[in-house]
Length: 112
Image 1 (cartoon, rainbow, N blue to C red):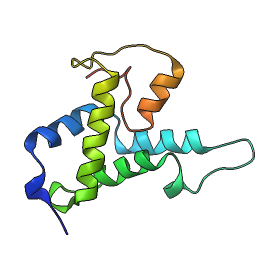
Image 2 (image 1 turned 90 degrees about the vertical axis):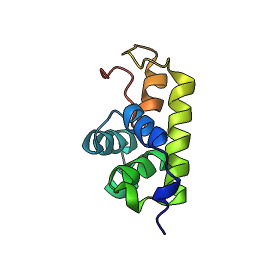
Image 3 (image 1 turned 45 degrees about the vertical axis):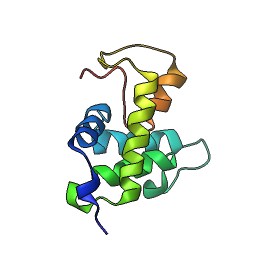
Image 4 (image 1 turned 180 degrees about the vertical axis):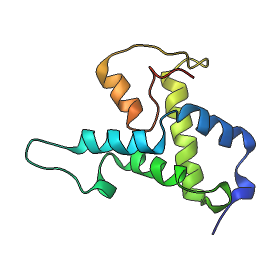
C-alpha cells in the first residue's frame, strides 16, 4: 500500500539532498564494502541493511513508497543531520565516519 500522501515535500527534498550518491554509486560502494578476501556478498544482499533500503527507496516513485520507506527516509535524514552541518559543504573527516555515511548514501566529500 502506497502512502505518498503522508510524505511531505520537506522530507522528500531533504532525503534527496542528503542522499547525494546515485543508485549506481551506492550499489557499487555497498558491494565493495561487503567484499572480503574469501567471500563476496550476492549483489542484492551486499552492504548494510539501511543502505540496501536506501537503494530500494531510490528505485521507487514517490507514489509507490510505503510507510516503512518513509521511516527509512526519516532515519537517514536524521543520521546525516546529526553528523553534518546544515550546509552540507564538502568536509573531510575520518575514514570510518565517511564510510558510515556512505553506507547510507551520503558522501561527505561530494559537492552539493
